[in-house]
Amino acid sequence: MLFIFRKMGKYKGQVIYSLIVKALAAGADLLLPFILAYMIDELLFEVTTSDYWLLIFTGIGMLLIALLGWFFNISANRSAEKVSSLTVRDVRNELFYKTEKLSASQVDEISTSSLISRLTSDTYNIFQMVGSLQRLGIRAPMLLIGGIIMSAFMDPLLTLVMIAMLPLISIVVWQYSKKGQPLYKDIQVQMDEIIRVLRENITGVRVVRALSMTDYEQQRFKNENKKAVDKELIATITMNKISPIISVVMNVGLVIVLIFGAYRVADGATKVGQILALITYFTIILNSMASLTRIFIRMSKAAASAERIVEVLNMETQMVDGNLPLVMNDEVHLEFDHVDFSYQGKESHLEDITFKISKGQTLGIIGATGSGKTTIINLIMRFYDPQKGVIKVFGEDIKNINRDELRRHVGLVLQNDSVFSDTIHENIAFSRPGVDANQVKMAKEIAQADFIDDIPETYNYEIAQRGTNISGGQRQRLLIARAVASNPKLLILDDASSALDYRTDKNLRFAITTHLKDTTKIIVAQRVSSIKDADLILIIDNGRIAAQGTHEELLKTNEIYQLLVKHQLGEGLV
Ligand SMILES: Nc1ncnc2c1ncn2[C@@H]1O[C@H](COP(=O)(O)OP(=O)(O)OP(=O)(O)O)[C@@H](O)[C@H]1O
Image 1 (cartoon, rainbow, N blue to C red):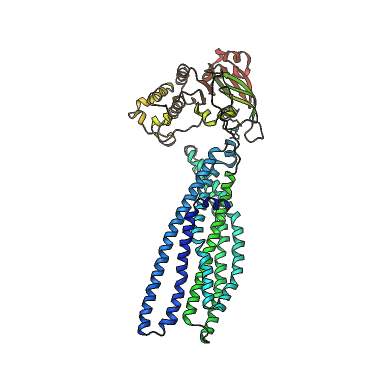
Image 2 (image 1 turned 30 degrees about the horizontal axis):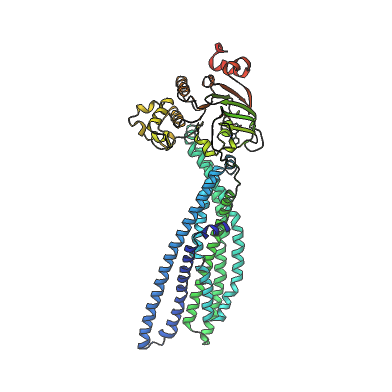
């Protein structure tokens, strides 16, 4: 909760304005029953000609005060909305900025869906609370205290009856608010699950349909949705018990006041107008208690959400960025020195990886599914840091290089990379400085993306979201064009040509070798033909390098490689 108040603190001028204006509006509301009592008791029953005019002027005065109250309320509410929007904008920005700085393993730990729900529904809960707090936070207590003072001013004895009810009400509100917070946290955690199922289905919509899994997925979503509804119900039922309890307690007080009031009017101890005003004040007190309850409910929700947001904001920055300028005068462009890595720090995913390649050379990585090929790429891109060993890129320890600087010099195509809903030109150029129309054209040629010339709109053709209006092979070529367009120092193609036919794949490799002579290339592939011309080939098996060497060397010495070649290229080559 402190976190929210700190964030609101930035707009304290505006908050103070809202609160003052709200207080004025509440003051106007409190004055009205008082004037009404005066009109009934002093003017209405003993009306003379002069009193008649006073009655009219007092009525007009009441109307003006009501209008003023209305104006103050509108102005304060507007200001309150502005503060809540700005506060939540700041929270979202800070959370997004932090999310960008999280390491890939921290994102794995929290999960992407949870990050999305923290950025959306959790921040919305804070938005609602900040608004309510300004709209009702001053108005409700003012009406409550003001109502008590005004009624005590009119009839202290009857007011005591009402005051006697307040401690009981406070205990009820406090107890239920305490219960509410964990329940609302549960709902938010369930929201993470709903977003997870939704994301999986949206990104995998075609697979779901192709495998006729729609019914199954609908059921899966229904289950998660039902769990959320059940949790919402438990929280709502729990919190909604507050209002009726308060209502019953207050109405009992009201009835007692009415009975005593009737006796006191009969005895001449008080007047009818005063009793009427008292009842109005008690209704104001009742409503202000209901408003306070609403604030407490919103505060419970917002506190649960703030806790989830603060949990992310307080995560330690695991990857410290180096700031050494990249000199790149080392001949060795990539070196792994006894590197060990595990995603969650438990089972090993890479073990004792050691190899090096020089500037302009090509590294081929081949191995079974799940053997650790992409994990090596993840470490080169510094998505994760290894637990042991040193990785040097361009001759510098990767930990000393600024990550943005490192990635600016790398052209990367990952297995499931996506294109964007934009023109072909933008998909290749990607708004990078220096990547002009000529570079884009050159990239198209290297990537064998001739299909672009066959489209009437050529580079202006609009690609649909996730590239649904081009084929898999065309998408891969577009991604390769994007990676080579900036003339990177290091080009990484992770299974990037799997959808290309052998001939196009061969032409692609030839074009890369001739056009990007100084670029160091890493090709991860399942096909021997894609990596056989590499200067160094790594055979990865279960997170370890089973063998390394050139095609010829491995053909002579390594059984796994011999088998691969035999199966893929034919007996004659072994
Ligand atoms: N983010 C992650 N968290 C935990 N484990 C992971 C993560 N990514 C990959 N793994 C595990 O690490 C191992 C190596 O995965 P990796 O993606 O490197 O394999 P790969 O050789 O590239 O496989 P493929 O050829 O199928 O792409 C696998 O057992 C995989 O389940």
